[in-house]
Image (tube, rainbow, N blue to C red; front, side):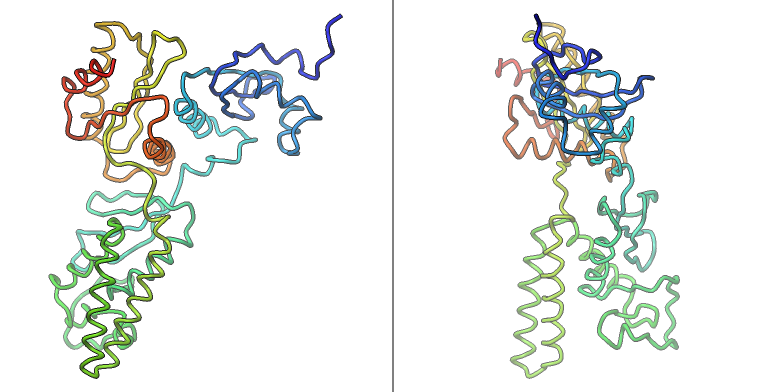
Length: 359
């Protein structure tokens, strides 16, 4: 007599392999997407021990009437596939990633004579520079205010029409703006301020250079008994140090280089080619790893990377940044179970020779 099991009949006999699983309702609509290193054990585990602790997942299991499986040959492939399905299908019982199809950005409109920082919802202007995405508005607003104070950038919303007869606002009196509106600074000088601000937001090492610069200016002013100027420099140092505390959010884990990642396939004779173009994760391809076939597939993947580099905008969308960050962390962790070839300065022929040498 067979032992009773809490696993319902609608759960198929899944493979004991890594991959992605999807619980679906009676009509086949996705309810929940997850990943595991062992699909069979993970899915069946939902029904043992009285079921999941989460009321949300318990409700999902009461509705579910089927499970779909997508086996993979590696954990990275499973992670990317899981993210793709959550962002695409928006299953109602997944919390993670569902809101990552929109974000906030810091924007410099560089085609303006006197650029100012803005917090915007999407990167849309071809003549602008962007930092982001951020997953909420509060943090970029704080970064914006600190950056404006450090570099004395204008924060006024109206267009600047320099006029020597104009009286500068209180921001100038407080030492927080160089007043281009009153012609107290010119276009070239102001754009140098904006260039430095943009560099600080994208170059993690530049902050240390600025701290040294502000410290020297403070000490020189103090030695000359110019205590007000010394206090101004100290304030800029304080704002800069506060801004550096947000560096974890300004610096994405995404890698902006181009890569060809080779991952193991489900079968030993197959591989998964995962191209990445300037940080963007392109569609993957499963390849029979036999002479003639894989070389042609590698050439196609390298060509797809070059085309994507030419066509893609300079900033990642929130949706693109999800998979890009996953790849960046995988690279930092040592490329477990796979091989990453930097295509930033390498052509397809060199890549093929490198793969042949790697076996």
